[in-house]
Image 1 (cartoon, helix red, strand yellow):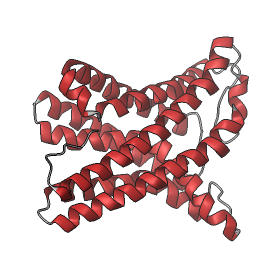
Image 2 (cartoon, rainbow, N blue to C red):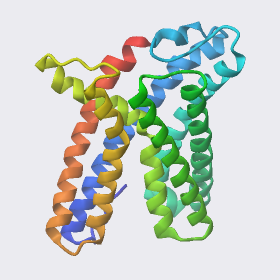
Image 3 (tube, rainbow, N blue to C red):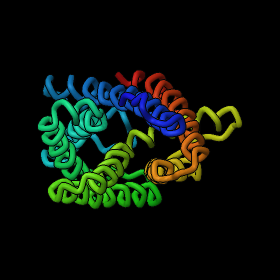
Length: 267
């Protein structure tokens, strides 16, 4: 996401902050994609899905449950695809130089996002991959919002309403990455709370706060970014750009922690 040198200084700060966060987020998201490919790829190609039960809080491979197993594996692999595709939609060069690719990749992103969300509902409410009532509520609201904004992004694109499409698509992008935000949020919370002797379990207040924050905070920051873009006050743009730079550092730290303590150990 290059920054135009022609932008006024405050707008450049805001754009630089957004670019810094995007770079940090892409690093973390693609590390998550690599984990998905490595964790699921071997068992799927080898025909033995039992290693997928390495994460005990998730209902993974169940002998005889063909539909459930397909939903589980398909949901995970498609989640990797939608995460990978979503990042490319935010690269300005792709939109400018290859607009047809941008449009087709966008169709893939929105279509797969809807499929992943629906299979996620199945896994939680039918198959029983649940972490607790509060987490179930958070996941469900997140999923409903994905459906809403994916459909709004699709409709506004067909109507050629570029401004509305951008807003809805960015919201859909953040919401689709809620599972990734949850993981880096857990890591950041652990880095702060563990030295204080506070453990994070799936029914405690810290996890519940992180669970809801995994989609509420990104949406709030995006709204703040939109407001800063519209603002005529230089201080608002500079402050928001600085906040995004700070969030970029936290995102990178949470991603590195997730790689070290959450993803790498189970590969």
